[in-house]
Image (cartoon, rainbow, N blue to C red):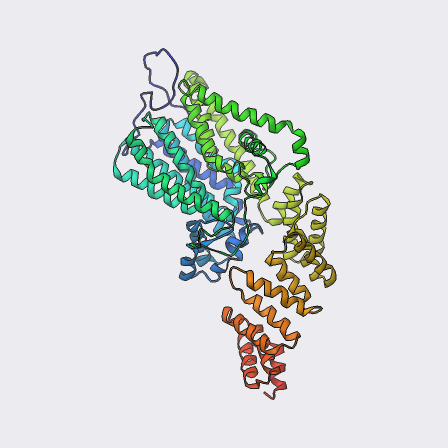
Length: 634
């Protein structure tokens, strides 16, 4: 696939395969692709579609998808008002309103029952991203088709990218990278033909990328890499001034992300329904240990690029006691990291592409290398979505350089590239099947990491929500048997026992959960539900706490407390709670029915009749309301 190279006089000295030092074909606007290039692009788009087509039959998974779509109240219904609210709302400890707006569009047009339209949208963006990845490599390599083809195939078909495409909640990945590539292409055009329009387009696309995912801030150091690759003086006044608006925007979105991940709401500018943080306790690991984790991720992502084996939706940290005894792979990872950085700097002038490509990889992956731990995993497949562009660009350059010296191998290489594409397609389709639903996803994780407790906790909660209570209890107990303990496990056990009618055991589990975190609003609420019959006064106390500490008022909190007060014969107080529940959710027939009981027992017959009739209007044939009205002579 490599094109014949024009003969040029031999040069002495170091080889520097970059557009800044070589006479390469111009990539100015107006010089389009050749027919052969368009053919490669069409084949690439088709191959990506074939690889991911089975994902269209996949389901939502019970992991972030509920917060983003299926249980998102702003999508029920998806109205203009809810769209406006999304731009000031933190979802799952992330501020990415443009991502949420695209999901809102899916919800408004297709509802929230089927994942198919959401995954189709992700796939469409991924196809576009693959073409943009090709285009960026084509322009920056000086129209080297082989380099661009390898980058496009690697980006579009590598199985490590399945998580970013097949998982609905990772819409933010495919969307931010779409605008990231557009910003990069615009800036490269600006470097080739300076002008305000391409620079401004790069800035606009960068802002849109940041509104899609905060990881987009990595574009700023990448722009400096582009300057260096082009041969521009990095410290010239013009080069520095060009970057100031980008840097200012990056700082703003970086501060927002750090504040939100730490449990804040950016000084009240944003609203959130969560009071928690995703940043792990910094004191759990030393800085040196965190550097080891970062080096491990840096190395393993490269390993999985070459050999995409053992993929998982969840890569747990190693057990602390084993890690601190010394695991050779983490020490080797540190050596590997420093070797890569050292070699790229040492050969920066002689082999510029090495420093450029590894620099692109490092800058786009650095923020998720767990120096500051976010979440419970040491690495994640989705973190490679953009960084792999740099590594495939390096591989493409190496192979192109080799084939220009050995043109007789062009046919063999083309066959090899087709074989690699087929291999990637098969691996990707297999990985897509793992993401088919929540059961298949977490069963796959547990098979790979049987000693990890959190995957069993996650699958246990899904079993509980889908009515498979015995399986839920088995998973929670298996998680505890690994030595892993959490509030979530005990809360899950409490809910499971409560569903089975084992109230005493349920309350015992909730008490254990609150022993670990007495401020957990969800556990207080669930203990209140379990205590309604045996200890309604305890329910009221728990719900007082829930209502006082909930960030967003919920009708269910008031309706459950109103019911507990009914059982305590506190009828006037019960009516007040149901007044608030109805104000927050005027469509719940049971709130009207129970308020009717409170009014009836308080002597307000007319008000009770009105509420019972309203309950019947909302739920025709409601037997409880019909019976009450008969008792009242109606």
